[in-house]
Image (tube, rainbow, N blue to C red; front, side, top):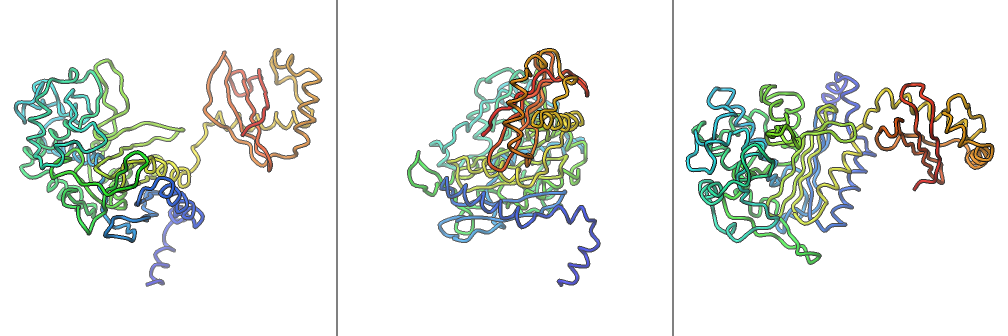
Length: 463
């Protein structure tokens, strides 16, 4: 078996092999997760990482429940609102078949809903319908101790006055997704979960469960905490409360399989993935980046598709970085700390490549480093300075720069920090200069253009 694996590995292209986590990266993740659980008291976490378009890491940590003492990455955690993108996918698949349209009104399928003759399916999926959210709280309210049906949720919350006119505002609404789930079932003529099993989960070899059935000694237990009191097992909500708004349980690795499908545009038609990731605009033309069941945006120069989830005693985070062919899944069995987000952000720093700098920033970095070397050696080229900068660098300033910086020797690192921005007609960039025993900050303002003269070159201590 080992020889066969080696033979297969030999056939893989070098870049694919290079995407695997190094032992050092794995150790960093282990330390990150262990520290986060220890700091917060969160009992357990299950992690999956996609890099280079394939799952390269799946590991669980801590105690899944009072009955399960050993972490197991195969255990299905409740992913809650991450389920919404699957409900949206079901709608899109039905639209592909010509059985409905995103621009159909709700009243065409489900009677009696307030504003149903004006609310579209697209507005349900994008949280722009105006329907009152039935679970805005971060705790179980009294009714959740009793079983509920989707229709009962609709009768109690979707027949209240609208919070705003459809399409004019964005407001998270679990109620809208319950209505969307009912539409899927009416059009597909089968239960929502059965439809998803047939069209998505089985083709992707994903083991997905109804979270109401993933309760008991064989499954992770949700935990809560009152303020800084002891960590206590949570009582799950009664059957039916999350339905199409968040009914799924699965392992981190299984959710990562869906992320890989998203990157590769498989399982769903490519235009369905694109539709899900296209931010929906309000009547005034604005958007907060939410599409159909997912948030989209860009941070630190990196595009992402993201959604989090909260069930009783569980928090989850799923972020896909399409351009990097990477994804990070973090599932935890608590809902009382920032551990889920902290782990997700920490893993991203470990496994993602540095965000690519623009061509202009790359050139500016080399130029800034050259000018810094001039300052520390007392050889500043004044032709590269504006009139004001030449005024600033009087002989005493040049001497102090040379004396104080020259004594430090060669920097060990020189990198841009923060974003490039315009101010006062100049291009502002800031750099961090690292030495073995200290760090400095270099703030620059330059005229626009590759050879724009410097208006400012200020060096100061940094933390």
